[in-house]
Length: 187
Image (tube, rainbow, N blue to C red):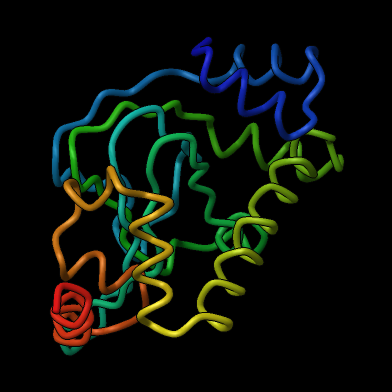
């Protein structure tokens, strides 16, 4: 099993036995840029852990518009809890934005863990909940300028891997607003 996954699981309180169980059911997957993992409206077959690369989840409307749900990069879990809990197709598209190395955990195993309130399921749920709480706080408590500044401080490597449109989507603003923020920052 990849050392980065072991360290991440250990950091979130997983026991050695739980880490071993995850290692026994995951497989590694290498994907190229712009590969679709889950089409909107399809049932997911796996949840993922990002070892290398950047993935994007987005909602596609019938009018052809796309709304970014989330970006995922190294050491992030990608889990569609709505689909798992409701046993329904994914409401969003999931794709790679760069070449990616992922660990794949079968959704059937994950659902079995959910049915018995397995500690692994509960810890993954808590990990995702904390991530969402932090993202919500980030979006609500900071101005767009502050969000961009924090993004630059915390994720400088992503500035080179994402385009301005993608960074703006992550920050919850338009690309035009991001351009204005960047211009004011350099003035």
